[in-house]
Image 1 (cartoon, rainbow over the protein chains, first blue to last red):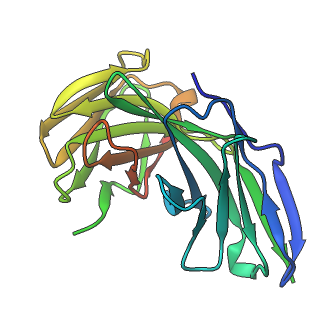
Image 2: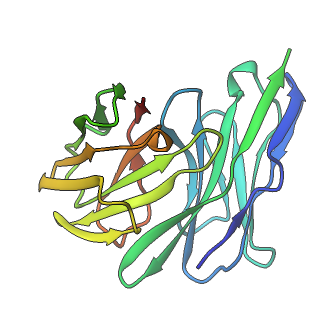
Length: 115
Length: 113
């Protein structure tokens, strides 16, 4: 089974500063990679995904992530954060087994953007 | 319609009550999922329905009973719950069981007194 590691449980950062949220997973055999964002008392919203093709994927609100197969990583970056980016971010890996895709979530990283 | 809806948003119940959570999607997805999320933790998979049939039960206690009456609707029946079952219950769907992307609903916040 997969394991997904988000080493940083909390990341404090000042507004307009760059940020990187790290995600590593255990195996790169037939995996798909996702970042979800969760605002307080809400469900999960898909931020971006890597299914195939270009290893650099971008979201509409300025986040990007790069699939690095050799390092089994999918780190999330934003060059300049806003207060509204304060939320919990979950990295997820989807692995196909027996014609079924199972999600493995990391433990989450709380991004706290300060003014 | 490109979203997963869940009702109710909040639910408070006693340990002897029977209640149900409802999840609905009209995207033509044929796989639906229930997750449980405790505070400050990632979601944990509970059940998977594939083409309206229960495919995966992640050793969930029998006080949780899922039901998939049709391809758009997923229920979670609750009976004799414990306070430690208090959590955010998330529903998700995907186009097919073998396809990667899952779409999540907003969740039902359950409190068991």
